[in-house]
Image (cartoon, rainbow, N blue to C red):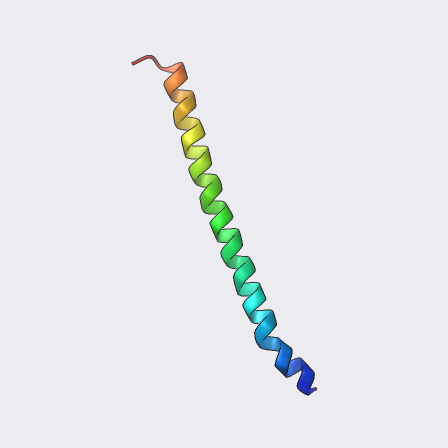
Length: 47
């Protein structure tokens, strides 16, 4: 039983890191989509 208690903080930290990584990847993809869309608009719309 003691072993389970000792591993709980590690599991919590691991889950927290995974959630942070997911959040970073969503942010990165949003930035990439923004720039791709902006570049596409620039090529399709003459200034």
